[in-house]
Every structure is written in structure tokens, then in C-alpha cells.
Length: 159
Image (cartoon, rainbow, N blue to C red):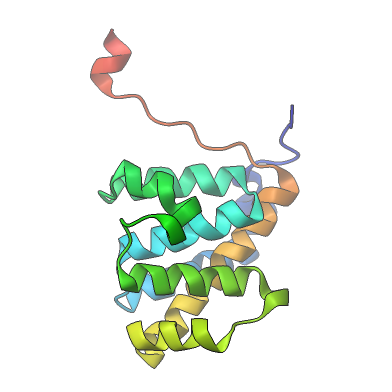
């Protein structure tokens, strides 16, 4: 069984400036108007690729709180084969995979698909979101942050 080397809260305490910088980078895309549900799908996919248990769970919970269907969240890992994803989501997920698995580079096909769905500015902000989650994943995986627990509904706790 894996154990945490440090926790998420430790990162903020140990390096508040780095924490703030990574957090700010991650917020730019939403502030620029990119859809928050789309951004959660992107963050979930990068986290799956990078094997960051904390971030996978965190973005599943965030996605649920934003109203993303459970089936869609469950199928992010196989988005290429799942019909639940729009063309824009597919382009964003392909872009995320290309940037997360960077040694493969970004193919002309993926770039064309992304630029067909996103303006130049949107794609730049989407890239900043992918960069940010990849940074978070490096910290989460390196320190084996404990995944956040699902909050129990008040009525379930009373049962």
C-alpha cells in the first residue's frame, strides 16, 4: 500500500509562493471564459495519464459538483471510444494528451482539430490549463498526496 510522503496542505505551507503561482496558472483559463466542465475533463484526463491519485479524485469530485454526468467522468479514460464527448471536448482531450505525453509532440492532425474548435486565445488558455494540471500532477504523484474523501450527504451520515 502506498503512503503519502507529504500532503496537499503541506505544499501550501512549505512553498506558498510556488503554490500560489501554480494555482494562478490553473485559474487563467476559466477566467478567460473557457467552460469549467471542459476544463475539469481536461484536468481529469491529464491526471489519469500522470497517475496522480489525488488529482484524479479531486477532479472527479469537482466535475460532479459542476454537474458533469457520472458516466462522462467515468469514460474520460476512454474518451476516444465514448460517444458522450462533443467535438470541442474531443479536441481538448486530444490536445491534453499530446501536451501531457510531450515526447510524442503535437501532431499536425491534433493541432488542426484543436484550432478548428478553439480560437487562438482559447487554445493558449487551454494550454495554460494543461500546463497547470501537469505541474499539480508532478507534485501530487511525487509526494503521493492522499486523495480527497468524498463528502457524505448529511442524511447519509445520520443513517
